[in-house]
Length: 105
Image 1 (tube, rainbow, N blue to C red):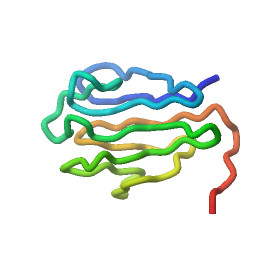
Image 2 (image 1 turned 180 degrees about the vertical axis):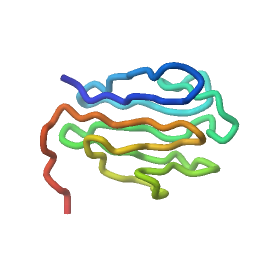
Image 3 (image 1 turned 90 degrees about the vertical axis):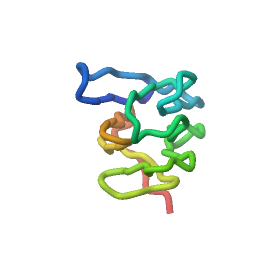
């Protein structure tokens, strides 16, 4: 099973997007993103979630208003099951298929 993102943007029911192994998903206001968010606080290319073959990472794409992980601003961070990503007014929950992810030092 692939990891997935559960998007809760408040305007509609939540939706789920899968992140394929070795792949990535882009998040932003622009039409070319995998997850499109209609919010002026979200940059056209806001951030992405990528899988490096072992771990999943959240990477900010130099967004104007920042990317937040569990309430803290981040530029590049490892993701764990249940982490909450916030871009603009939208919350996105990361769901990992792995029961335990070992901590990266």
